[in-house]
Image (cartoon, one colour):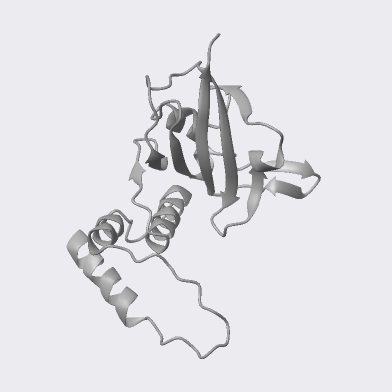
Amino acid sequence: MKLLFLTLCLLCLFSCQNPPAETTETPIEKPEISDDLLVRLSAEMTSNPQTEAEKERNEILNYAIENNLNIRETQSGLFYLITEKGEGEQLNWGDKIKADYTGTFLDGQVFDSTKNKDEPLEFYIGNMIDGWNEGLQLLRPGAAATFLVPSRLGYGEKGIEVKKGQYLVPPGAVLRFDLKVVEKLSE
């Protein structure tokens, strides 16, 4: 069944591509995805998503395919890609760290970043959203990673409301965080 679904996905992907319309704009080059990555990520998709979690999972997998991200999934449903390994011991729950990060929606819109602030964020692992608390424990000081966070591991169905009806992060948002662990702080 998965092989049939994968074959149909690949056929759809390749047959549904229209030739580019003539334009004077310079086209944005998408990273070329390897066949192995395309097959692996496509095979992980749910063929007929029924729940919000299944829909978000497919949304994340499609995003990874479109952006050539060789992501991995944890048991909870967090997707991650470690881009720099870092050094030293792996981080643990309760560790105090400094991290630089940029949080975006999957459309690329930035909703928060330490780039707009004077210094990295200091915090304890365990005091952040579930996706960060879990993902940071996969890293070492100096590591950099991308986390693709389903809403249930992010800000959930409440989002982050800044004023009545106005949201910094809307309810049910799937988020991308690019972060670097600057250092582990001693207690």
